[in-house]
Image (cartoon, rainbow, N blue to C red; front, side, top):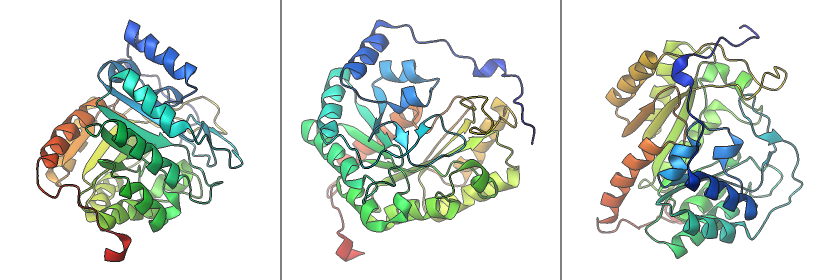
Length: 312
């Protein structure tokens, strides 16, 4: 694999956000000392999503205890520091942003005894208390595949539980931190369905890291085997050129190839597929689709029934 990235093609160029609403939200987040993954991950869709009623908040700070080689977030040891007022701050920010679909994600917090699962749950519960119609998606770490921690998050009733598998199995050790794993991520998605089959599950795959077609196909088969509902495909974009920290881009995958994988995944039975060079795991088009599905579900009787761990 080359240590230099190819020239960026025209289809990956986007206009910088310029609207008044975008800058008002940016200033408000800074004032509340809140972090969005939109900013930390340098997301190309940030302006479009913020103006369209969607935002992704990153809980528990901006320092991750893991060091995946695709990620822009800084790594280190937060030493157990946690802002216990953050759930209230996030709720306040959401009310000011006029959102209808919020995504909560976080850095990995292996320094916390529960991996931050209770903090996730309290944030979901606070949002739901303030606005029961708000649709909440969580994009979580793997919690080291601890079933009790995953169950704590699910019991707070997020509408969508997302956890990213990131890449194909053969590239996982090169792309992700050694404490992460392909089988471990699959087990998280499987546990969600075991704990509460009514929760929608979602994952994301980066392309452009050197994966082969047969490996991508096998990944899709593995995801369907654990009843994953939604998959997104996006182009890997190296956060920096520091090759000791971040992987170079192996190739820029064409829009036609992304369309191919969208077609394949839909034929395999995924409820929804978003696939394109600029697609990210939190993506407005996919969230708009899920919003429609979830609102229909809420009209059904017994839609809030939640099994206890004792029922498993």
